[in-house]
Image (cartoon, rainbow, N blue to C red):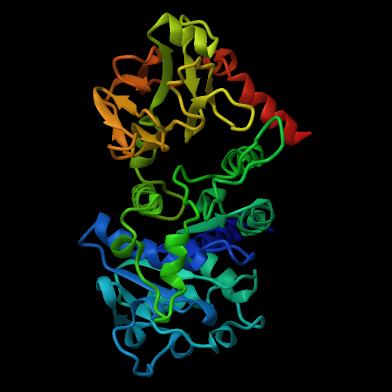
Length: 449
């Protein structure tokens, strides 16, 4: 193939995947059922409008068994237009309805799959969305397979959310990344979200003794992009979708006192931030990156964790002259316990200050923050309390250069750390010599072998 023909083919392929500047599309995808796709799609729509009140949000379902109508329809009148008729027309304008919570939706149809049968190409949905006047965020709930309708959703989306609830769903999640690679697309167009996690599940194992640690370690071993937020399983939230009224209720409005409420809000913020960063680095012309690309990359913060007290240095067993370089987010901190995978495992002594899974560091929009994970005595960030029975989980963000982190009771805990944040490039020597907590290293090795 001549060089000019090859460039023309690359340009045509890039144009097919080039997003609209005024419309961002997110697909919720996993070929395994029971991982919370519908719960995520519907509730993220509600939370996204809370994060950005000026953002129009549209939800559509490609699976008739998970219709957005049950959550957003204002009346029971049968719709004249559905996803099926809109796809045949090649535009969603006349099918979009305004629903509860101010969210727009497209009524579902059991015939939707017929509109994207295997004989069609994977850009049917994308072309229809491009012809649609709606400007804002579009959330797509997909079928539990990797058929043509799901492939259309992935091809049309700027970002695919891949919910993972267990190891089988992590295994099927790999298919999304394999498909993107086959299309010549970066894996950054998809990201895992740990969903419907039952944190009560424990294993009789020396390493990775709980479900969250097992899935985080497994995702890191596979080098799959992972959201820092995760969603717990909650009976109260499950009741919002299964009840005598036959409606699906919003977590934001009906389950404010659950952990899932805070987690869903954090996930919505993280998604909108990621979409905003994608927009900032989208090429203005095919093959010509935006001038913001290099600036965005250089602004990524470098984080080091340095014990301030001798007890903290002794507890984490590393030299205070060589601070720990944080390279994975979320970065989990907690008491050294063989049943929990912590990036920073603290050898706490009785009376305990540190909970088994205490808190984690997150990276958000160039900032470094802390979220408490339900610790008994709480977490302090520059004098502000997180966690414990009387405080919010956060997040709270450090200043541009970092700040003080205390795990446990503010005036009694010896576990005081300086969190140092810089934006200079990380040298190879720092990467090679930065100490890695032994528990995490051993756990990853156990999973690899």
